[in-house]
Image (cartoon, rainbow, N blue to C red; front, side, top):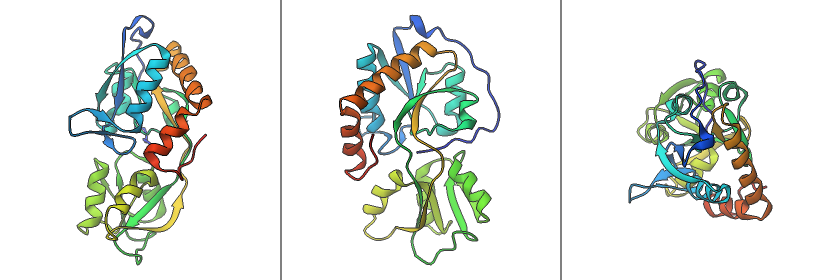
Length: 240
């Protein structure tokens, strides 16, 4: 779950959600299996499937919008879309600027991935996606931090020797490690940073928040949410 570190506060604006016919669902589209753009150019992944189900249960018509990660909160606040579903953990820093539904994924660990077991995680060069709390954690750890705009670039940096290891959400890293045929491996201990993932909304959209909270409670209660989590993250994934 990605954790955005807010560099500066931004001011909320109201967009009159109560009367809206269509709700615009904002996501990054570049963080599988949470969200990605498929070969047909459509938003796909766990959050697309869950978001469509939540919209159906809430009686809303929803369309999907992609936005780069480092500006995803400011563009929500400025009205470019109405929600964020992008693997975004609920943190006190974010909660000062936007509001959140209840979590739809339990908290999960971050992990280091490298080419070799012989990596100095405390004094080496560690990469992380910019504007994440993984990046902040590395900066505070004593290691040399190298940031990249996208998660894919952090993996490439490890492969080409620009960084000794990457720190990212373990859910994101696991399929990459599994598909690398032994090239990449988990090293060191898992790191717990932040809590569960929720849907971000503007502070003014309390009615929309209530609708989505009711829908999330519904998919939790009948087992739909746990089935989706296992489908996209595997049978060992944390569930409700």
